[in-house]
Length: 144
Length: 107
Image 1 (tube, chains in turn blue, orange):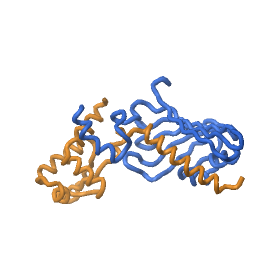
Image 2 (spheres, chains in turn yellow, orange; image 1 turned 180 degrees about the vertical axis):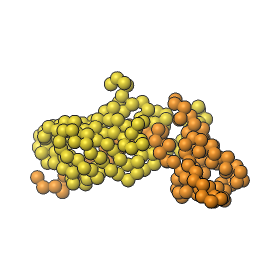
Image 3 (tube, chains in turn purple, brown; image 1 turned 30 degrees about the vertical axis):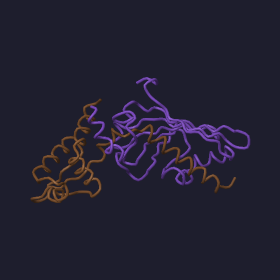
Image 4 (cartoon, helix red, strand yellow; image 1 turned 90 degrees about the vertical axis):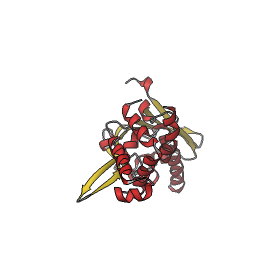
């Protein structure tokens, strides 16, 4: 598997808050739970933890993570992998948070890297998840 | 395209079979008899559809006395999910919640 075969997604936004404050929201377990998911996060390199959400169609709701880098208040990196019986064929990605001071605020950048072609669903552009999958199956099946 | 995808698509391409699967997803475990009442086809036809869904890994059967109960195996759909677009939407909405939280936090 080479880097060229995988894709990243990037979400970035300017936020009118200091990097230190945003850093707290990204690295304190009870604050992370408020905006992301239940977790046993600790900002310590090598620490393994889970994010837990309600299971939905096709996803068991659990994410296996490991802290890879902690550089307050600018850079946080952790792995983001599928868990349990979905681990073998599921997501194996790296999430990198970068906080850059910008005027009175902060540029917040999240990159999730390592999506493989098979992570993009049975058919590229088929649309996302349930119930789109079933809704479009007839069309797709006709073409195949 | 991997073979497992072929089997999933073939299984769900049939409208009657898809309706049976969707009903199992919505209602949870069901017997052949209960499913037949809603499928609009005969009980042997429903059994045949269930066998094909089972072969594709989309349903599991659990014998209990003289009855067999069927349930949807939603995990089987995981390979069909487009995770890049799912995760992009996921993070966009989480960024919104994060911004709301930051407004409420002390400096």
